[in-house]
Structure formats: C-alpha cells, structure tokens
Amino acid sequence: MDQDMCNIETGTSINIKRTD
Image (tube, rainbow, N blue to C red):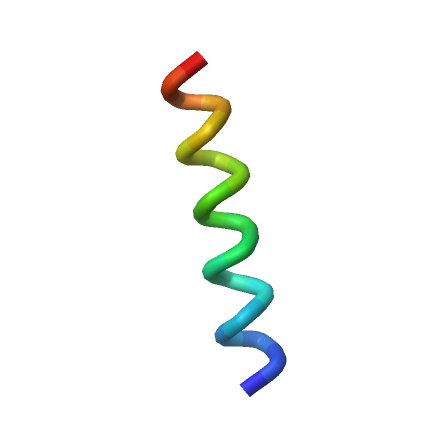
C-alpha cells in the first residue's frame, strides 16, 4: 500500500513539472 501512495505522489510531481 505504501508503494501505491508513493507512485501517486511521484505522478503528481511530474504532472506539476509538465505544466511548467
């Protein structure tokens, strides 16, 4: 379950960088 949360957090970080 911890890995799932980590994956979501990483995806959000990438999404923010993509918008920039």
